[in-house]
Image (cartoon, rainbow, N blue to C red; front, side, top):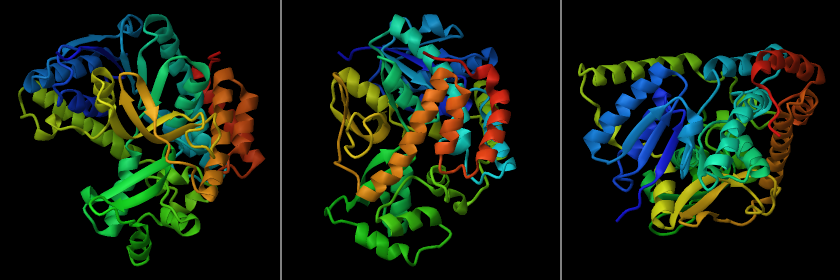
Length: 426
């Protein structure tokens, strides 16, 4: 008989990510009898998410017991898995993370996982994460913390340094990279097999092969890329020419880590589109819950995220390979610092998460990534100590920041905006 578990979902009131997580949880029957506790701060949004979860659970026959609460402290009692997807005033503050550095002449792409914007994402996010994690250390010390929030690498790096809780981050970046190379190759993605390792949003595809024959597809990729649409992923393709490998999951993400990343475009995240899509989804959920609309078929289909695969593999000892997860390095990638958060394949089973080493990265690629690891280390130190002096050092280490005067100006302004959220975590 399958063993039941307790899963706590922090940030369950998010309509968009909540839907993705629900699609995965309720499209499996491997967790029947388990308890799913939905946690959110906004009572109205949490209520909507709870009604949606109960509807999907009933329709699918997944067999969960569903609870909801705003009291995340008590929710953690006895949990075995904690899913984290919270963010503080996400779009408003992220927009400022992007716009204020530009005012001081910083040219960047997204302002989320790299560059000065990522520093302040880190400063305000780690205190929230560690509030949860310190409570987990008291109430459910053997639980696994599965993170989806950005800045992914910095959160996992901080957890590896400062907490005993088992943690990993999950991201769909490897699948975006897979899609991109298959598109250039002109092959169905099911026929293309990729292996990747590196940093979150900055993976190196170490192998690209034909899934059936095992043929190395890198020579064909380099040949076809020369005549492919020049507007498609130009920065990533420039890196392919320079380093010989496909790096990352899209120009905007990779560009966050590079001094010249802005050359791929400086449009930033499309906040208006994001808010419009969230509003549409919320309206559709309300209509379905009220019986004014039919439930779309895609609501019952897996999203492609891997959290449920991790949970079921650990719970039922399946020794399943997961294409990529963000973990504390400890020399899994030998030529990146041991004290880094890296993205590598992992195997999940009843004993935990086991990283799969693909060997050292190509030398030039490792050196390119090491520069960013050092920025991440300094940003984590700044956030954990709530130190403005360390924050300035993190900015001056960052290749995206080209001016001390600009660094000081944006630091002062963004520090004041984020002051309510910055606090020491150690």
